[in-house]
Image (cartoon, rainbow, N blue to C red; front, side, top):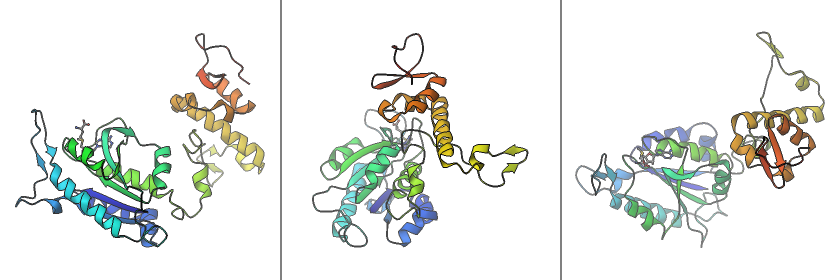
Length: 283
Ligand SMILES: C[S@@+](CC[C@H](N)C(=O)[O-])C[C@H]1O[C@@H](n2cnc3c(N)ncnc32)[C@H](O)[C@@H]1O
């Protein structure tokens, strides 16, 4: 996979040299380059922003440096070897994905990370100030598949932190980046639920024992206990995820745990149990 990041603070992305993503880069599994947007300015002051049309607070990122930077990234992507060779480029016919971090974007989720991990070429455009002139997004749609993406419902100072999070979430799903692919299977959000709690040695720590079932060696009981904890934890912390569960994926024991937590299955939906909920079998 090839990843290009454009930013006015390229040093911000230095963390992508570390840990598993850094190792994946060294191994050639990820080809990642970071460009300084100011390299694509033409004035003496290397200006990337200007005042907003229509008035208002803050500055807006000028369109031309963005167009020049993205054209350069496209050219280099097209010149890169194809995905069959080491150091992937964009396969013919597939447009690169341009991710534009923005609090006004679609929320970045594990499902989006999985989808983007399948692509050969991702480009990230880190905004600053009040964001990038909107015409850049329209212009880019003719060349890229454009995805405005939000990390969550809060406002950061710039797109760099969002890009660090997204590249890490996507990069670890690229085959070979995580040594043991099994560890991706049972994680939070892999099956619509949060992960169960995890413990390590010692079995007794500061008067707190590890749950006894985990020492039993009984794989079936351990799997059931973990599944119960996943359901309870998700019900307590993320009711929105419980409401999105597919009842077809819930067995009798799952439904009993959800009923204890105040949820019921009605037809093809999981609903909060209560006087307003339609009657339906729980188990
Ligand atoms: C101060 S913000 C601009 C916010 C913009 N004026 C708005 O209200 O939508 C500057 C930049 O930070 C990044 N950013 C801020 N919050 C973000 C979030 N929740 N997710 C992704 N990127 C974010 C974007 O790149 C954005 O262009």
